Amino acid sequence: MILFDGIIFNLQRSGGISILFNEIFSRLPVNSYELIGFQHTPPPTVAIKNYFFQAPRLMERYRPALVDHKYDIFHSTYYRLPAVRHGKVVTTVHDYTYEHFASGFRRAVHSFQKNKAIAGSDRIICVSESTRRDLLEFSGASYKDRAVVIYNGVSSDYCYIPEIDVISQVIFVGARYRYKNFKSVVYAISGMQNINIVCVGGGTFTGDEIKLMEKHIYGRYRYAGYLTNAELNREYNRSLCLIYPSLYEGFGIPILEAMQAGCPVVAVNCSSIPEIAGDAAILMDTGHPDELRQAIETIMITQEREELVSKGLIQASKFSWDKTYKQTMDIYEGLLGKVIS
Picture 1 (cartoon, rainbow, N blue to C red):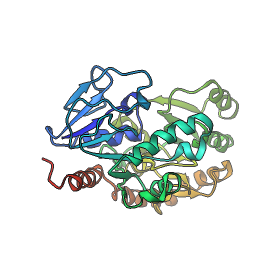
Picture 2: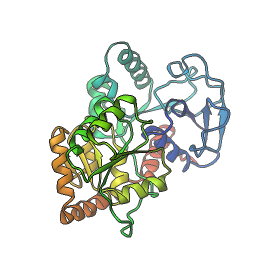
Picture 3: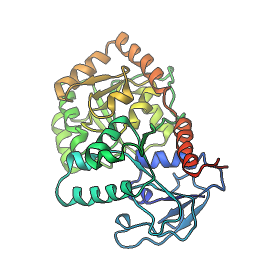
Picture 4: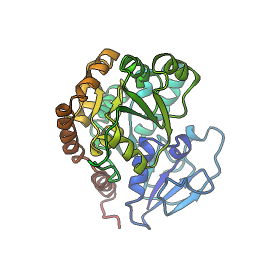
């Protein structure tokens, strides 16, 4: 029995981590796993079949997971260990954002929890080679033999629809704070009067964001909210390009979503991004507004855009959730020495 601690579904409404685990849940044999959750019913986005409610305690995310069920493998969705150990433990490491960008108490608490989970795990899954390098740097080279790379995938819900007309719109997906570099996008398109921007996910615009956009791109911005895969696929297909100027990513699922939907990608050449994007995106050195503007102008050239679309479709085809699931199952079965069915 594989026991999953579902704490991530209390920590984020949507995001790469919850997508990853939901994709794994949807493929597991029905009687092979259980999920401990902290809502009376699982979130509607969670494709879970064996769900057990557990009343959340104060500061639940930072405490060891209470486990009443016997298990062969315990796999937390976000850096927790079981309070009582019955079997093998697996931890997935997604990124080292706190270690790169946070400081003080927030960084100390997060790093302590992450490193405790890593130290107590029989196998450590990293979502990219970049994240594995960060693990060896920030958590310790002694984990080298326990740490393996299993890439995230991309949903088959995203597909290229040539019949959809491309409009003068760039798309920005996900959080917009600090290292996500959203301000640079606003400055970049401020002088491009024919370019609009649509933002997906990441929460509604803050007061500061609205002031910034009212000043620099008045009437040319839109918040689309949290979209279904089908809705997001349409936005990708009709957008000139995905602007992904983040200064750090453990993986970067939107890159693959956009590519699979025939939407060119502009990103920064840092952390895991060149691993995921390959030669199928325009990769900038710094994500400075001038670089962003030049990249958008390049994509506005029909021939350049068509070449990026073709390369992106090929690059995205190298990743799949089926591959992620199979490699994860190989980890489980290797630890147990038997096939899970």
